[in-house]
Image (cartoon, rainbow, N blue to C red; front, side, top):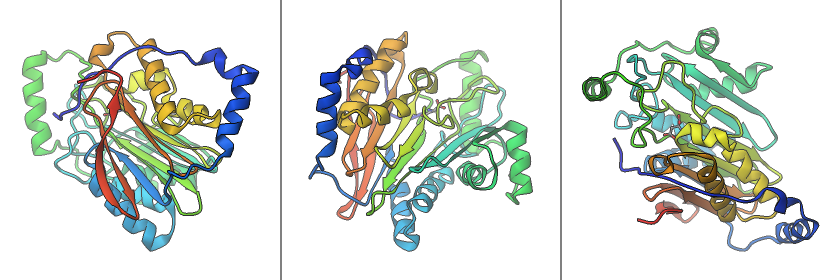
Length: 328
Ligand code: ASP
């Protein structure tokens, strides 16, 4: 599918963060209130983020809730029949079954997620129901589906979308039904937002890696990997090969780097370096990160070129190319 591409290498961070001198300069940096930030602000991954941001922005204006906004925004993508990596129209696993992952989080630590869930049109809304209506953070598979039924979510018919069926049939021929990790086959929507008062929220939803093994779950529903939000610091979300992001707890790492004084951009770049250092065959791995801090400053960075994101503020909703570790 898409135009996304490759990825890569190295990191350091570790002990330097604990040096007293570094801690002191970090504290100084965090205390200043950057003039470059904007609030409210909504960011989301890839070009499908533009219409998603538009819906999120309308919802924010309607209800004033940044949580409502990030849920409404990605619901747009979950219904986009042209998108083969989010929602029930997404590409299936290698058994031909579409399974969905999603997570949602607010800056006070509330979070919910669902993984390996079938027949649910809006997994992000189910993730929010887990957050708000259960004592748990995560429900998976049949349990998540049963919870959805109990909550009155309609169950959709389990058939592939016409385009997914075509792609799946092609894949079965060329891949001889072997599991593959293909960098072209993923592009989640992750959305993070901050309201005018500095309240943060985020959402992330995906059909995951195309032709994955049945039961595979990526980073998107893993709090701290695909999404992390903390009102004291900022928020981050991820896209790309979930396994590579889980290995470094990518979104949590970025928020913690910002807590220690990095700008969102510096934090995203450091996370990419860490990811590159911890993953083999990086030339075949794409991953990208988005971050905002509590001042409304933005960061974005990817392993390979091709990652872009949508940014909505009072002055508009624009698509921006992110920089990457490896150059075009
Ligand atoms: N991160 C998602 C996953 O690995 C896929 C993607 O971002 O495209 O499931």
